[in-house]
Length: 245
Length: 245
Image (cartoon, each protein chain N blue to C red):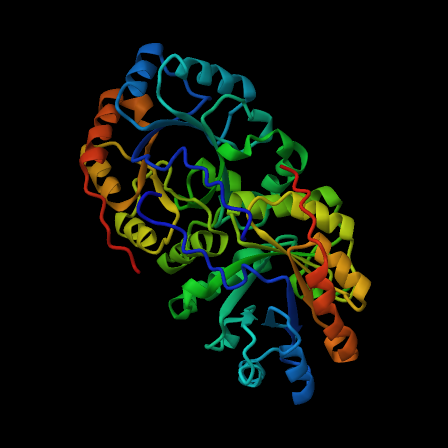
């Protein structure tokens, strides 16, 4: 409206490559240092189970020994550790019922909203596409949906909600890059995050071409060298510009 | 993101007073002319039952004899009559399940999205607060919610979704102006629409002070003179500027 403008959260506006660290998993200091100094654009902290205030605060303190920007994906207000550069609040578009779509989030705002640093908070429209993942089980996501529905979720979030981030989450498996490209092509203003199953240079390059921002997670804990190599692979990949309109 | 901007739909950006016409109700030509020439900012076409493509198209054709801007509230893709200045797609925040929150809307985009004039489409975050209304029955809205939850719905829609319009719908009864003011005060960028039960100058003035946009509906059909008088009452009311932040 005329006198009020969107104070658009933009701490993530230039992210091409992000490492996602799970507070519930162990990472030695040297590995953490390598991750932070890898050239990645940011560290995203979050996990689907076992996340607490304590393990989140401890991980943040260790990341803060380095200069890398660091954001928290907030799924439970009890874990709202202050001091991150930004906070994402996921809303699962393909959750079967309302709870993980906006229910829990509304309750959290009702109770703790006054504590949130709103200028650094951004909504994330999640579409969870690996039905076997913890994220799918926790949120009750219906991952067995056709391409057309995935695209419609993306467009609703982008154009009716006007959410700043749409997140295709294949957690645990490498996703459908053709669909990822199509979803991105249907977005008008939102940034498309892709996450899931990236273990090789070739996968990182493909995801970098298909999405705006590529999230690399599990491989950090299994094969650090492979993880570190994804940074350059994403950054030199040519992001395709085949938008639908 | 850097290369894509929000093409913000703004056909409603300056609306202070709006008349809402129901395609399923009868209005004589003279009454329609008086409504269109009343000085209102726009005609909003929509209803909770009995709306069809035919009665919507007929009403639009009659409104088009006048110069008043005219938008359609689209709850069923079958009624997507072309030629309106803008299209609102309501999403009911306090619907008990997902269907009227984003379910039906996603299905409609999946099937008919390619037909939508997206540059003239805006999402509306509805909060339905009269549990006895047809809108509440159709959408399965839970209207027996505390003030704090109404405010949280508004903030989630405004700040996580970034939706352009939040709509407090008291359809059939005059609402709580104190709550309306509070909800508006908690919005950062969305415009607050208020609708429901306005029959007198005093109610129109109060709603004009509490909300950004005042929607006047049923009284048109019951007491045209009273309806017409609400235009001036809203326009001279001083919109309060007591935003929370």
